[in-house]
Length: 272
Length: 242
Image (cartoon, rainbow over all chains, first blue to last red):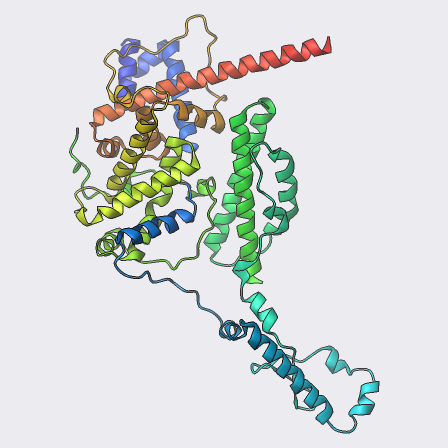
């Protein structure tokens, strides 16, 4: 067998187990050994590249908008709504500012009424320190009032603003460190990103996040992969500091890491 | 040209290598949306999409978008263009979905559209590479392994990292690049690639081999260039010390 024949075998059979004749040629020919070894390295490296990548969410949004314009979608899309807790539904009542103000005014008026309507001992009680029961308030009942020691209800402060704030966990802004990650290509990305990310990364290694265990594991695995990519790029850049493409890869990896860390932190917060 | 019914009824996922999807971290610019899992089979989703059901369209999109986007991104090397191309491919697919009769696997059909959209774009852009027609033509004058007489023996072992590999892939002519990505990165078999590319299995094998050998040359050039830069840097450093 000649080198030409060996290459024809490689072309037809790939790097799969070679026929005997090709193997015996390979044992004797150093050039073909080099070729075979190089192609094996190359294919193995290519198989390590990601076969799938998540497209940005806006891709579906934009595609769907275009489909609607073209009339491809024939019925309204059923949006899967997350089940909300009953108190989250209540917060919608307090969204208009007028209702919040009115509610707060009513609560204050009711509290004042109760204070002055109590027994005459109220005057002496005012001068005494608050009882220990008051320091550790009893649990709030479902109707929004806290039982007093005497059994009469004591109104609690209007929870509406807090409830509104807590009812929007997904709208939480990203951590301040991440919000500033809008580097231009000219920025020294591997000076600013790692420092900022190091500040928030310890928080990521907390307990299991909201959602399934698989999603949690997947997010952490993604983080591990991105860290590996960053390490590889940095290693490459140490050797070849003028490699602009490697810089771009590194910048992109840091941006993705920032997104991922933000996702993980958001998930963690929404469980709290 | 081979018939598009070569792999009728097969599911590509069954043949294709299952890769660790954690590698999808690259490109993880989008947050994972907590959508309700839909328990449709692909066939059911296709049937519903043919009736214009938006949820079915989204289901199909979620099933295939990662792979389609990855293919586009590797082909054009630019996320904005890749998004554009992926959207165009899905749009073409959904426009024609009513005509899908299941003669070939759905994902093959989708990938064929994607490859066509991408190659069309590359033709329009007329990148400074070999013409697609040339690169798709099997080269009859195949000789033995290319050797650099007098050049140092550049073995790729230990010298190939992700960065220089991706850069070299981007330098491949579009035809070679498509076959290489589909086979060696995405794990498609030659019969599937033949179906996607509209060529024979033999042609697909030939293209792949040429892509690999060309890639080897490109990587060797990269290594030489890097060695040259290192020498230059060392010389400059020595000069500045003197």
